[in-house]
Amino acid sequence: MQSFNHLITTRPHQVRQVLISDLHLSPEEPALVQAFLALLDDCLALPALKRLFILGDWFEVWLGDDVYLSLLEDERQTHWLTPLIAKLKQLRINGCEILVMHGNRDFLLGQPFCNLFGGELINEPYTLPVGQQNYRLEHGDALCTDDKRYQFFRKIMRNRLTQWYLLNKSLEKRLAIADNMRKKSQQNNANKAAHIMDVNDKAVRQAITTSDALLHGHTHRPEIHQATADKKRYVLGDWRLLNKDTRQPKVSAVIGAVTDDEHSNDRFSSNDLSGNAAKFELFEFTMLV
Figure 1 (cartoon, rainbow, N blue to C red):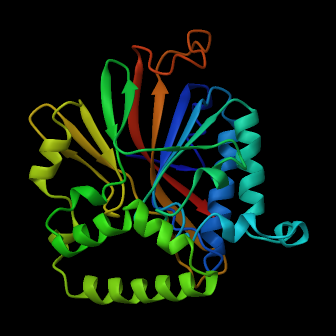
Figure 2: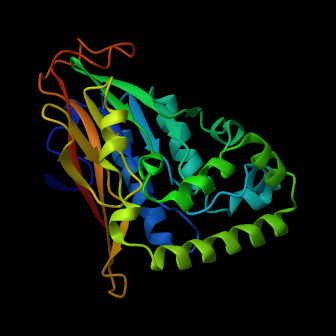
Figure 3: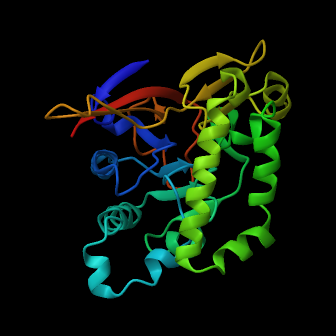
């Protein structure tokens, strides 16, 4: 796996699509926010970039689009989300689609917020053609079937009635519910064996049956696995703050990119993102804050 300070700067004309996951952005971790802004700057500099995928857990917690949409104009000016929205909007104006998938932390994220920058919410699983292969994209939590308690919780939280109930609570009550859920999750995870919180092999084989490869995040264990004899499972990494106590901390993340080995841009139009020479790779993205 190659490592780059910023995004694959040695071959910018070959990058067609970028895939990221598990950023867990929040105002409490400004270094991660700055790293995401840096990634967006890099994306803006990629001349052939046509898609940016955010495959879940974009935010540490998302209590509903109205938390931002209900702000007054002067409140938005100083809000930590506003610079992100501005750069994403510019990326979309430049012709790059922004496709967002729910994670287990931000399942209340809605299309109205994505409309602010021209983004699109996508359902999982999502099929991504890469060359002659079809990649199955998902967040990854549904594959952790050994964690029975979490799967029951996931089923309840992904229910539209449950989400309607939560979104009709006051912001204060939603904050209290989220805080309580976070504490219980931390307590439960502390007592779980590590393998329980990883994907289940049987679930992976079932998921990959009609695809050529599987790509997900969630587990925070970036790696390339041989899922079956002829199919691979790619795991995107979470965004990690390293050396946080130093004067200049570093953020590291394993991201995915679809690149084209052929140097011609003419063959790729906005409707053709999966030419025969396209291939998928994982890269380590690092940035000094």
